[in-house]
Image: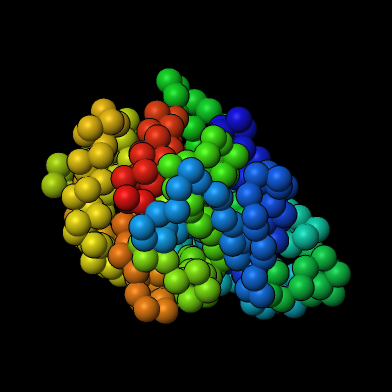
Length: 340
């Protein structure tokens, strides 16, 4: 069921600010398994009763949104100009197919042909403002009949399994994390009560998590994420950060958060005691909504538990089933350890 849910969630469009399809699906998945509500921003706030009340309130969160594109202008010839939503490397997108808005209008990201580029242009990556989306319209009027300004676009990239236990999907960041929290809510009672949040707009400033933190005011929080694995050719060992098939990743610091050291150390101890493969995030890179939860309301102790993932924020993120399963095991164990 876990990987069926990941597949289902990855196939939904949910660029930041347009998470409704993902939210509706998650609400359907967790119905009857917890107490939940949707706040005014669109975050899902769930509560799962455990065997005991924890000494310190615990929140687990994962974000529903994904990176994507937003239509900003329509040219007279029907081509669409766009901006990125979230951190996308422009070098990865020319030639990619996209689907736009509720109508799922098909388009292709185009750029100036290489033979028309100057030598200087050929030596540099195309900037986003030089790219466009071709939807096959012959005029501005034809394009306007299909697409509105402000509509989001996602890459056409289906969830697929490959090799021995590997899987790829457009939005594994962070639909895999969402699916793990769905499993936690649907599963057997945990040792302690937990709050669970499925948040909006993480990719554009961790906005949803700010609201969640101020509503729930947890004593401690575990952010369930994906993080960049650089176990690929030509990357020096000290820049690998983390690797697939070595278990969930625990961060001690990133560009947005210094994590609570006692939680980090305790999590490492729990993983070792439970014989769950686990690895530190070897470097100060990236960031997530922990920074918002940490400073919300009266402040919270925070920890990030991430699934290692190659090619993050591209049309084809790659993760491994073993890492996802072990992340789920660690989360359940940490609720038991942190609630005491």
